[in-house]
Structure formats: C-alpha cells, structure tokens
Image (cartoon, one colour):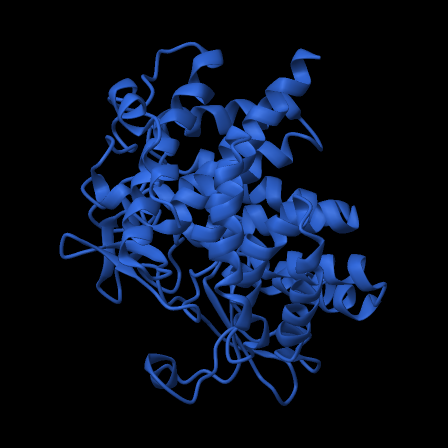
Length: 403
C-alpha cells in the first residue's frame, strides 16, 4: 500500500493534537477532540503495520512493545472493528480501505468451533462491515453463526464457552463452563436469523440468555463470571470466577458484558426481562460503595486493595457504549448522562493517551486477567473498540437531538 496515503497531512494533524479532551470542555468539542486524537493514534498504529509488510493485529503492549496476535486469538476482531468505527466517525474512505483489509485477513475464523469467541471475532469485524454496506460479508456472518451453534448444549440450554480438556481450564473441575462474556456472542446469532430466516439461531440465543438470566446473577444483580453446567441433566455444578478476585466477588468487566449483552437481547426480542436485567446490573454498578468518583471501575468491585487496585478502562468503555443504546429504550436522559460522565473520564488525560504514546492505543489503564498475571494496567484493543463504538453512538444521538 502507498505509504503517502498515511503520511498525507499527518504532520499537521499531529501538531493539532497534543492531548485528549479536557473534562471541562464544551459538549460540542468533546466528540471532535476525541476523533482527532483517535485519528492520530490509529494512523500511527496503521503506519507501523503497513511498514512491516505484513498484516498484523495489535492487541496490547507487553514489555514496552506492541503485542500482535494471530487471527484465532479471541481479540482478533476488535482492531478491524475499530477501523470500521474510524470510517464511521470521520467519513474518510481510507479507514474503510483499512477496515476491509484487516477484516478480510481474519476470514477463516468463521469456521472456528473450539471456543465461543467467534461471535466477538466476526461480529465486531465482518458484522460492522455488513452493517456499513459490505454485502459480501453476509456469508461470513452466517457461517460463523453455524460454527457458534455447534457449541450449543441442548440439555443445559446454553452455549458452552470453553473446552475443558486442555490448558488451565482442565484444572478447574468444570464440565461445561459458561462465562458471562458469552452474552456478547448472541448478536451474531440474532443477525444470522435476520439474514437467513432460519429461526434456530434466534432460539439458541434466547435459550442462552434465559438461562444466563436465571443462573448468572446474584440477588444484588452482580454476576458470576463462570457457571459450570452438567451435560447430563443441565444442573448448575459450580458458580466460579476465572478472571475476578474470588468466586463471590464482582468482576468489573463481567458486569459490563452483562449490561451490554442484555441490552442487545432486548433490542432483538423486546423481552422486558432483558431490559430490566440490563438496568438492574447497571444499578449495581452505580450504587456500589467501591464505584469510583471518576466512573472508571476497579478491575473487581471487591478487590481487597481498593483504592490502590488497578482500574479497568475496558469495563468503563463497554458500559458507556451499552448505556448509549439503553438510553434509546427507556429513561433516555438518565442513561445518556451516565454514559457521558464515563466518556468524559475516558476522554481525559487520565485515561486517554497522548499522541505517539501507549503503543499507539487510545486508552490507557485496562486489565486483562489479574489472576492469570497478564495484561495488568495496559492498553487493550477491546477497550479502544468499545470507546470508539461509544463515541460513534454518542455522535449519532447528539446529531439526532439537534434535528
């Protein structure tokens, strides 16, 4: 690819972007400022990839260097998805070019059946491309939904998240683990029914959502990370965590996945129980004694070292994006105002990196898995993805309100 495409006007752009938005700036400037910053960072990210002569997929920063992952990594759809949001935010066709290139580079994941994350991988990349007019991506989305459907376990009525015959998962005593993250994969199934007219995908998604609603949530509307089901009779064998502090603690990103996932399920089914669960799960967040005053959660609401525990900007970005959609269904001003508060923090210098720093990722201070000792207080590609999605949703909502 011609490198002049990337460098054209680049120096002038860098001179105009010194830091992220100031928390006190006017609402009308917030979106523009954060788009400019995103453009600056993503241009540097793309320049590094294009200069390599390879198609690379940035996930995080490790030992001071950008860590790239292969197409089968569960996060492989987020960077291509970010390119689609860059196109949507700017209207600049160069981002569509990169979005197509990096999306199509992970085409083969549509056949992946050995874990549940094909929904993340394909919906964030091909799904966004299809939404923005790439009709050729329809077949990829359908094939990926077929692959995800192979993980449906009819007796328990859920989609199994992980296989338990290898790696650290084999040491936990699980039979059929289902993680709250899996709620994020249901959108792929809903889309497949819409594209094919085959209701089986829809029915699988609804069964999974119903059993998650039944088994994943505590009375206070915090969620377990892992529910382990019996493949024999569908009963719950264990209620555990893998990435949270403890089995009975509330892992922040898991709470975020639930809010987002049930919001999507309400959109697709209009089942009021799903809307209510998204709302109640968010109420848990804002009413928790350990929810920080800058609205960016600690990695676990019950982590023992609060207030010295790491924050998780990825959880905040996921929640903000979900709230913008939630605001379109009920109590709009309430949910949008909370989303705006979270975004103001994420868009501030406390979380939003200066141009050329942070491995050219947009957000700082996210957490992958503290129990596994990986990705602690680092940038993560999915934090950037959901931040850009939230920014896009905010932009659309505010443009609509101006009409």
